[in-house]
Length: 142
Image (tube, rainbow, N blue to C red):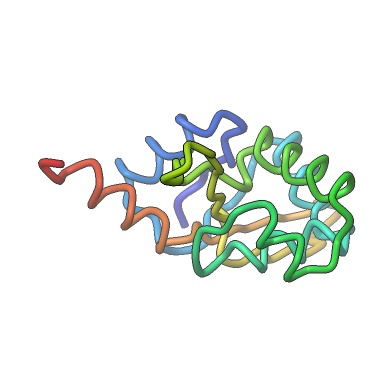
Protein backbone atom coordinates (compact mmCIF):
# COMPACT_ATOMS: atom_id res chain seq x y z
CA UNK A 1 0.00 0.00 0.00
CA UNK A 2 1.24 3.49 -0.87
CA UNK A 3 1.55 5.71 2.20
CA UNK A 4 0.47 9.33 1.98
CA UNK A 5 -1.10 12.16 3.87
CA UNK A 6 -4.03 14.22 2.75
CA UNK A 7 -2.45 17.56 2.05
CA UNK A 8 -4.17 20.60 3.52
CA UNK A 9 -2.97 22.81 0.65
CA UNK A 10 -5.19 22.17 -2.37
CA UNK A 11 -2.41 22.65 -4.94
CA UNK A 12 -0.22 20.12 -3.09
CA UNK A 13 -3.08 17.63 -3.10
CA UNK A 14 -3.77 18.10 -6.82
CA UNK A 15 -0.06 17.79 -7.65
CA UNK A 16 0.25 14.62 -5.60
CA UNK A 17 -2.84 13.15 -7.28
CA UNK A 18 -1.68 14.05 -10.82
CA UNK A 19 1.86 12.78 -10.32
CA UNK A 20 0.97 9.48 -8.69
CA UNK A 21 -2.39 8.87 -10.41
CA UNK A 22 -3.83 7.45 -7.20
CA UNK A 23 -7.11 5.61 -7.46
CA UNK A 24 -6.80 3.23 -4.53
CA UNK A 25 -6.91 3.80 -0.77
CA UNK A 26 -3.93 5.60 0.73
CA UNK A 27 -2.99 5.34 4.37
CA UNK A 28 -3.08 8.68 6.14
CA UNK A 29 -0.03 8.89 8.35
CA UNK A 30 -0.08 12.53 9.43
CA UNK A 31 -1.94 12.89 12.72
CA UNK A 32 -3.52 16.24 11.79
CA UNK A 33 -4.98 14.88 8.57
CA UNK A 34 -6.25 11.76 10.32
CA UNK A 35 -7.98 13.95 12.93
CA UNK A 36 -9.50 16.07 10.14
CA UNK A 37 -10.97 12.98 8.47
CA UNK A 38 -12.28 11.68 11.79
CA UNK A 39 -13.86 15.08 12.52
CA UNK A 40 -15.64 14.99 9.16
CA UNK A 41 -16.93 11.47 9.80
CA UNK A 42 -18.28 12.61 13.17
CA UNK A 43 -20.15 15.55 11.60
CA UNK A 44 -23.28 14.50 9.71
CA UNK A 45 -23.57 17.81 7.85
CA UNK A 46 -19.98 17.69 6.57
CA UNK A 47 -20.55 14.13 5.35
CA UNK A 48 -23.67 15.31 3.50
CA UNK A 49 -21.63 18.08 1.86
CA UNK A 50 -18.94 15.62 0.72
CA UNK A 51 -21.59 13.21 -0.57
CA UNK A 52 -23.34 15.96 -2.50
CA UNK A 53 -20.18 17.12 -4.28
CA UNK A 54 -18.66 13.68 -4.86
CA UNK A 55 -19.95 12.78 -8.34
CA UNK A 56 -20.04 16.27 -9.88
CA UNK A 57 -19.01 19.81 -9.07
CA UNK A 58 -21.73 21.92 -7.49
CA UNK A 59 -22.24 25.45 -6.29
CA UNK A 60 -22.67 26.14 -2.59
CA UNK A 61 -26.35 26.92 -3.15
CA UNK A 62 -26.88 23.59 -4.95
CA UNK A 63 -25.12 21.70 -2.15
CA UNK A 64 -27.09 23.47 0.58
CA UNK A 65 -30.41 23.02 -1.19
CA UNK A 66 -29.74 19.30 -1.71
CA UNK A 67 -28.54 18.69 1.85
CA UNK A 68 -31.04 20.98 3.65
CA UNK A 69 -28.25 22.68 5.60
CA UNK A 70 -28.66 26.34 6.60
CA UNK A 71 -26.62 28.89 4.64
CA UNK A 72 -24.50 30.14 7.53
CA UNK A 73 -23.64 26.62 8.74
CA UNK A 74 -23.11 25.35 5.19
CA UNK A 75 -20.79 28.19 4.17
CA UNK A 76 -18.74 27.76 7.36
CA UNK A 77 -18.39 24.00 6.89
CA UNK A 78 -17.60 24.21 3.17
CA UNK A 79 -14.93 26.83 3.91
CA UNK A 80 -13.42 24.51 6.55
CA UNK A 81 -13.50 21.53 4.15
CA UNK A 82 -11.88 23.70 1.47
CA UNK A 83 -9.12 24.83 3.83
CA UNK A 84 -8.43 21.23 4.85
CA UNK A 85 -8.30 20.01 1.24
CA UNK A 86 -11.34 17.70 1.40
CA UNK A 87 -13.22 19.91 -1.06
CA UNK A 88 -11.61 21.83 -3.91
CA UNK A 89 -12.68 24.78 -5.97
CA UNK A 90 -13.22 23.16 -9.36
CA UNK A 91 -14.42 26.03 -11.49
CA UNK A 92 -15.50 29.68 -11.36
CA UNK A 93 -18.36 30.54 -13.68
CA UNK A 94 -19.28 34.05 -14.79
CA UNK A 95 -22.88 34.37 -15.96
CA UNK A 96 -23.87 36.54 -18.96
CA UNK A 97 -25.07 39.23 -16.56
CA UNK A 98 -21.63 39.38 -14.88
CA UNK A 99 -22.39 37.45 -11.69
CA UNK A 100 -19.85 34.86 -10.65
CA UNK A 101 -20.19 31.67 -8.68
CA UNK A 102 -17.90 28.79 -7.79
CA UNK A 103 -18.29 25.04 -8.20
CA UNK A 104 -16.83 22.71 -5.59
CA UNK A 105 -15.93 19.02 -5.74
CA UNK A 106 -15.10 16.45 -3.05
CA UNK A 107 -11.51 15.16 -3.17
CA UNK A 108 -12.26 11.81 -1.53
CA UNK A 109 -14.35 8.92 -2.77
CA UNK A 110 -14.23 6.67 0.29
CA UNK A 111 -12.82 6.66 3.81
CA UNK A 112 -12.05 3.64 5.97
CA UNK A 113 -11.18 3.81 9.67
CA UNK A 114 -10.11 0.98 11.93
CA UNK A 115 -8.74 0.68 15.42
CA UNK A 116 -5.74 -1.64 15.33
CA UNK A 117 -3.40 -2.47 18.22
CA UNK A 118 -3.88 0.88 20.05
CA UNK A 119 -3.66 2.81 16.76
CA UNK A 120 -6.34 4.43 14.67
CA UNK A 121 -5.71 3.64 11.01
CA UNK A 122 -7.36 5.94 8.47
CA UNK A 123 -7.34 5.12 4.77
CA UNK A 124 -8.84 7.29 2.06
CA UNK A 125 -9.49 6.71 -1.63
CA UNK A 126 -9.03 9.81 -3.77
CA UNK A 127 -11.93 10.89 -5.96
CA UNK A 128 -10.64 9.72 -9.35
CA UNK A 129 -13.36 11.71 -11.19
CA UNK A 130 -11.82 15.03 -10.20
CA UNK A 131 -8.27 13.72 -10.71
CA UNK A 132 -9.03 12.65 -14.28
CA UNK A 133 -10.79 15.95 -14.97
CA UNK A 134 -7.78 17.94 -13.68
CA UNK A 135 -5.34 15.86 -15.73
CA UNK A 136 -7.45 16.26 -18.88
CA UNK A 137 -7.67 20.01 -18.35
CA UNK A 138 -3.94 20.24 -17.63
CA UNK A 139 -2.92 18.37 -20.78
CA UNK A 140 -5.46 20.01 -23.13
CA UNK A 141 -4.46 22.84 -25.41
CA UNK A 142 -7.34 25.06 -24.24
